[in-house]
Image (cartoon, rainbow, N blue to C red; front, side, top):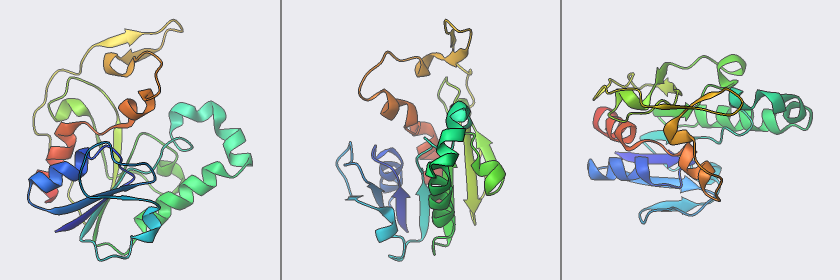
Length: 193
């Protein structure tokens, strides 16, 4: 199958599908962190290129409920609507099988509810990261290796965060936090490929 991994710079999902024998390419406005087939540019340029499947990870910056305190400003200046329009364009792409991946976000109330909610601990990683999947012509992912949910860290403000998420400030902290866990990528490649 020809598989487009949209809005992915890490190569994690792309490489899982390649290992499973598929013709997979990632696409992002950023260069790929890992060598492999990658289109650096706007995914809109290649949505009509005859893909059999797309797994898309649209940016959650203006959508995730974790940033709700900034919503009023993002609604007023149009950033939130632009982000929703981008998600809708991905959902409407002329591709037979589609998965849109995002954290808990306003996609659920402004477009539609997700078809499935998964966690890394369902796929062999001792971590929590609530991940919503909006599916078109794809079955729900089946857990592959249920493990402990991982340790948590209490912040100074009293928030409970997963230990893996509690990273010191760095240039690439946002990249680490947004990356797909390899066990989830492997499950996608094995079950949907």
